[in-house]
Image (cartoon, one colour):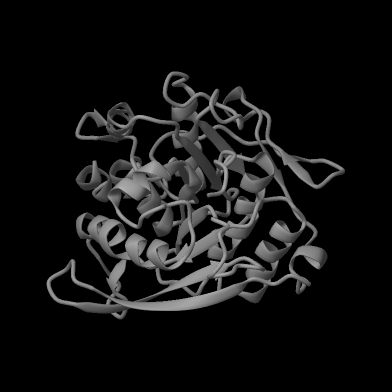
Length: 322
């Protein structure tokens, strides 16, 4: 599936898109009930509260490493957001979210933004979501030239990035290896914006065995290529992996260049109740789509993650602490 999806990224599909009518509610919720006849919603947080400094701030740590998965070694950097109270000598374990930036951006774009970090701090301190670790790598193996090789990036993720991060910080992987990652897949999520969304879709075909939740924002792929339905490849991946899974898509409005592609893909997926049963209840549903009125901008990802936390779709209840 990696090679199929690598050739299929588009952000606007040649499929008619039904008009979306939005109604603003008193509570700040954007209601879009006529998209494919299935209700969805988008909720805004109070920026004056969430984007101010929190009394319980997390920290951001840079990690340097050298990848050996390409034509030559490349030195790279990623960011790790650690929640308030993280203790390297403690026993508490944390769910982990890997987030990928958009084209032309870098690992600092989201979590290096002070308002974004503050928002995550508030989401945790308010009890909206339990404390989590966010990892922000890059899929570029050469940042200067912005070069990508998705087949090799999968190896970089599985054999270099994940062992480095989860061998250093206390995620739910008891061991930072394939066995540990598979056993803890429900406590791991992969997300990204725009080209990072495409990366997220690509990794779905390669990492569903080690991550149960995928959150692609403002980026879709062609539904049909050469007569073959790309969703069939996704269904094949689901059939090959045991365990739960959840896809939480989100996109901006008509000013988001991904709007048409994401809307068309969402309607196509909603038509398949067997693989993409619709709703926010994990276990009985496997897919949900949030439509906003945002523009195409990486920092809107914090709003989509806020909605995902509100909907409770990221990580099921954890097992007992060791």
